[in-house]
Image (cartoon, rainbow, N blue to C red; front, side, top):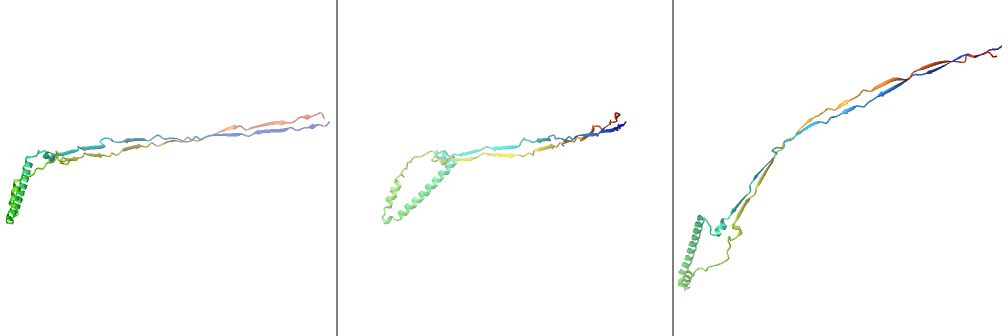
Length: 197
């Protein structure tokens, strides 16, 4: 009788371990507050305005004189001037007539002409008169108003309080964990004896 013997074999299965890695990388956080600014400007008494009144002077002396409204001093001065002129005219006329009488022997009829000139009145002249005689007899002197403007400059006070930025840098974090455990298993395969032979 023959025996066939099959040896038992050992089957080994092994699973490796696996490691997992999770990481957190948050970004930086920056906060910036607005700067505190204060502006001060003095607007009081910035502009000074002063004005002098305009003046108008009207001189109607000559217009009143045309209406014979004169001061006593002027009347006396004009009368003296007329008298001096009349005296000068009379002296000139008398001298001229004296020169004519000195040549009476020439038979020029000087006595007749002199007598006629002295006896005849001076012819009167009439013309249209205006009161006053012309527009320029009234004089106007105008002094315009003056405006003085003074502007004072005041410096602007600017105060700036800076505020530093707030920066937060969170830490990066990495976590290591076992994703799969290692395993090993053994299995016996075969090991039967065929005794039928």
